[in-house]
Length: 278
Image (cartoon, rainbow, N blue to C red; front, side, top):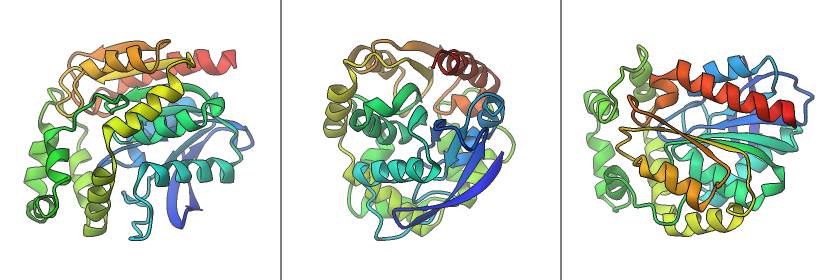
């Protein structure tokens, strides 16, 4: 894959790209917290033979800018997604989402359903009944969230990411994530979690997508400590009735990283069918 630089909503973002750059349909992969576009590089390489692929670093994270003035709300991220697609000349997308990429991408999809050809989602909240995990609860509390990040260090990050992950991560995966964490990023994270209300964005998603029957694949780690696996089936029931649900019994919150071969195989099979059909 190659890297192209985009400027959207005042944010410079490195975007991994592959496939036919003139195609008006693309696979758009959106990472969450504390992720980056490298999580999806293997998938992008595998898809490049038959699909256009766009994988940005999202505002506030990794190689993207972290401007204080950016709108770190669902609205701000929806505007970023629209701006990226418009600049790239993409009319319709196959969304591939993880963690915070789920509420951002699904909110965008609910507002632009005519542009969504399919959805793959993993480990993120998309329903109004979701309750924040314990870390998010801390981050949403003024002062407590700031203290958490002031006290965080490399060993603590490794312990938190190991939690609920029975399979090992690739070498240097957690170190690479930790090395990208700085104060502007943690400030962005606090703004994001304090602005996101599951009942609010969940209702937008439910009302905008539940009657659309969008072809979907829901992949989940059985040991995910942040978004319990029951939300996989609940998302199918309330949002994506046409979805196929696959639970990775030996994965945690990052099945696309700790079990990448199986994850890529599942997504390739699904998207191969969708793209050939379209």
